[in-house]
Amino acid sequence: MITIYSVEEAKKTILKRKPLTRMQYAPALVSRTEALFGAGVTPPRAVEIILHSVEERGDEALREWSARLDKYEGEEIVIAPERLKQAWKTLDPRLQQVMQVSLERICEFHERQPIQSWVTTEMGGMLGQRVSAIERVGVYVPGGTAPLPSSLLMSVIPAKVAGVKQVIVATPPEPHQAILAAAYLCNVDAVYQIGGAQAIAAMAFGTESVVRVDKIVGAGNLFVTLAKQQLFGVVGMEGLAGPTETMVIADGSANPDWVAADLLAQAEHDVQASAILLTPDANLAKAVQVAVAEQLPRLSRNDILLASLENASGIVVTESLQEAATLANEYAAEHLCLSVGNPQALMDQINNAGGFFLGDHSFEVLGDYIAGPSHVMPTGGTARYASPLNVLDFVKISSVIGLDATTAKSLSNLAAQLADVEGLTAHAAAARAREERA
Image 1 (tube, rainbow, N blue to C red):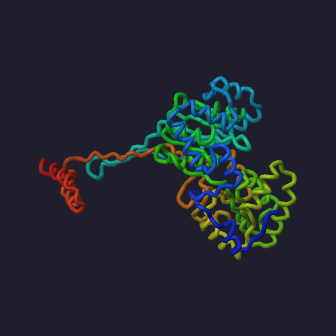
Image 2: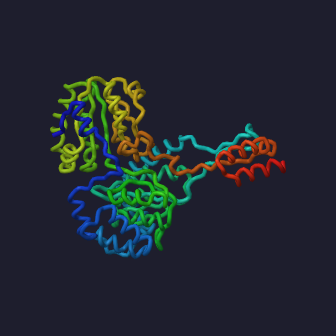
Image 3: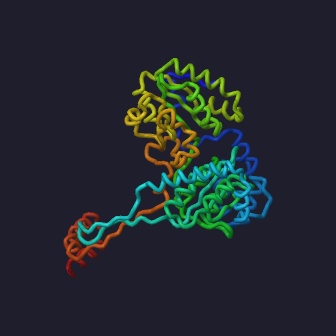
């Protein structure tokens, strides 16, 4: 059963954020980690061990960790291109069509994102910015409790649109056919069957089989997140992913069955996923609670759903839609669904959300699979400053400075004066040398 909270109760519980950097580890995970790595070894220390071994021993370490952690005894790290092609050819034609439509919509959306180099000659000579694609990108596609070909599509396609020269994919051993088929459809350059922290290490450092990349994107389990955290700076990262989350703001016009279905759709991802409804309508709150209880027994991932609903989900009754908007802005949800009479007006009151889903016809499941924007969105409150995965994540900007002699002369003494204030005499001398020569 999903619980109904007052605002004050919710602020102390389901609306209270825990920083991603202060991860709490379930006792079962701690026990499993110690069983695999030794007494007293914490998950961060275990990840550190994995990263170091892959950096030092490459493919040999990858095979050892695959056997030890994923129970995969095979030698093959790189999946042959023929397997990708065969996976696509033998895929259910209906699923082929769905993937094609998804690919086309994701492409069209990201191709509309404005991004281009520019120059000006109005500041003396030439100044500007050069936009260039990152050369190599690694995409991590999790295995976990369900295959996620949609995650591959949503991560690879923006990189391709940006012009990344080489896009590789890492996914746990013996991947599902749908993931291989999606990789073929997206024309990825290589697929490696390695998972967890060892996959992140392989892409960050490179091995005999795995190409070293410049940036890694994609969510995974706790070990993947810890690996990305520890390797930040060695390789680019798009962010650290916490448990997925959705927040719905609904008024009396909302359909309680639809709201319940949307909450359950998010809650089934993971036992730590959060699905929260904010509403000023107490009758709607009760109706959604009843609808959740009625729909739950018909769903297959019942154990996960029950845990998610108990751990981090709930219904919050607010004084008004304005209070709901304020709470939503503070929470900065990954997904914010506005099931209200005027969703556009309500959105205008809220700054922080990974994605806004406006009205009954823009339900989140469409965003997860096929609407167009990438479903890789900031979690854990990071939507206060971070953006969904997009074309800008796969390019870099270089400043271009080509001043003319007149402008350089006029600026040299000014630069030298600033250098004097900072005590950087070599800087000042370099500026004055140009000034004197000019």
